[in-house]
Image (cartoon, rainbow, N blue to C red; front, top):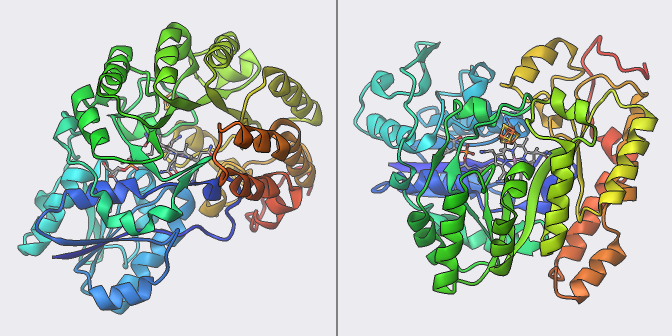
Length: 467
Ligand code: B12
Ligand code: SF4
């Protein structure tokens, strides 16, 4: 069968991080690898055009679309266009949003919504379609039958992640010059684990993975790395240091093989504090940056997110990072209820901590989370495009213009200046290409106008204190 897998494009309201991080479409490469024996193509609309032409020339039997919350409208558009060109094409959507909010895809142009991990589902679904079997026996689906949504049995989670195939990276190879990850060009995304044992109220990871963690073996991770020749490996696991022994074993395998590249990981501050030696080890083989969700600079606010960590732990973690020369990409969450004084306090704190690249995002009720259920009635917009963590979707205490002026102020006062970046480029820590990308990012996030221009219409009846 002919299968077209589509990554939707960036939308006009998006500001900030979507342009500075544009890695290969890992999800689609993984799904493609699960379809041996079929003709599979990937179309990445973030970096290439021509959906209509591709639908007409390739004539896919199945169109599979991925995407997180901000691109839900774009996912709809892909399905709508595919159906309008050929009503017999089966349109399939999947991913976090589709799994946690399936009713958002209850439309006649969406044939199948997949719920949960896609590897087994896509293989069985395509097989059933090819052989004209009913979809009832494919677990993890919500599909349309006689105009109604039919739900099949819940899909069991993949117990052994080593059994999943390596991503079919060659299908997006033609775009590799266009992919980058923050400071780095030619990144490879590598997934080595799934799930998280914590329960942060704002996060959908534990909801999606049903509180279950699974890990690939170090040997399996190493064999995937061996196939890659990239400037940087970005491990997409939520906490790469969740299982310290495993992280240590991966380090050892890399070191023993003399495999050389740079690494980017995400980790929790408390894992780093419990095992500072792991940072020293990984730094010695090329770990450059860690994304850490510090989230808050006040203990009570951190507790309210159920992060199960502390400001003290965050600060100890920052010391360790400085000690081993690993760049910190530190995430802080801005509360829409903050006053000007709260912004001032945040600025003072972050500046004093010397974080390489602080990221300020607005507390956002992600659809599918408990926080979303609590805050649903207060949402000031129903436009998913602005659920990008830079726009507020909740009422602000400050007048909204002033709120965004303060968001912009966070970035003007706390992030690296262009001259800091130039200095790092001169000393070889960042590649030259960084400058243009960071310039673009800063132009967006340091301008209150950019936030306001792109925030879209507020819901009728919604109020912020500015109205
Ligand atoms: C790495 C990562 C990042 C990286 C880069 C991500 C990227 N690829 O561009 C960075 C750090 C830059 C990042 C940034 C952000 N991220 Co992020 N990120 C992740 C993370 C940890 C892993 C993503 C990943 O690659 N997973 C591996 C793939 C294989 O898994 P998957 O996408 O779930 O796909 C599987 C299934 O869902 C399913 N599936 C998916 N699509 C389809 C389609 C079909 C047809 C089928 C059949 C199946 C299927 O099959 C796949 C294989 O099993 C996830 C959390 C997580 N653990 O997944 C958050 C996550 C995706 N991020 C999230 C968010 C919100 C953001 C930010 C907005 C956060 C911010 N504060 O700024 C930004 C936005 C950046 C942007 N470009 O727009 C949310 C998205 C939630 C949502 N509903 O939208 C997540 C889920 C985390 C969370 N807190 O809940 N992120
Ligand atoms: S925010 Fe991080 S630590 Fe908290 S539940 Fe999500 S993935 Fe786990």
